[in-house]
Length: 215
Image (cartoon, rainbow, N blue to C red; front, top):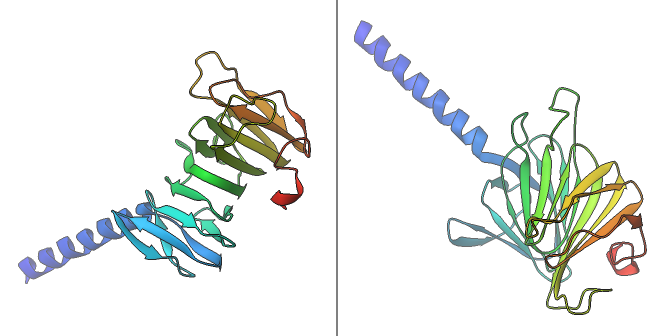
């Protein structure tokens, strides 16, 4: 009888540990879907479906005239617009930020934050090939463009735009060792061209994020 109880205890402990690992692996779910999009996980592709659970490392791609709404585990909201691609990272905690690696296109992020989280570091970061946008709690958009001249920098063919609708975002260029971060406040935007520093913060509407095609 004691042996059976011990075996049962081991089984329960194993199931609890497995459930905790699963919970840590889950980063959110699809809560809105228009058009056709695909999810790539462990080298396999499948169509995106409403209520589909998302894990760290998942790559999402939207087609033409398509977009996805994603709710993260902490209640934060992401919108991936048409012809875009991103890879999801981890879940927000007091020790590390969650990540969205934007490889192409445009992403809007409405991020939750509470005083119980660390006030000295970001709880969410959007990475592009040439920029990092780190925030605690805010509403902002990030767009990455490749293969087209950057406005104001005609020799640069890849650039990142960051526009802030609410809150504050710190933007830096990890490809430049000398580029100082730029703080972008509500109603402003910055542009990160190639390996150059982010431009000075300017009112929304002067760059592409404030343009008519972005809304």
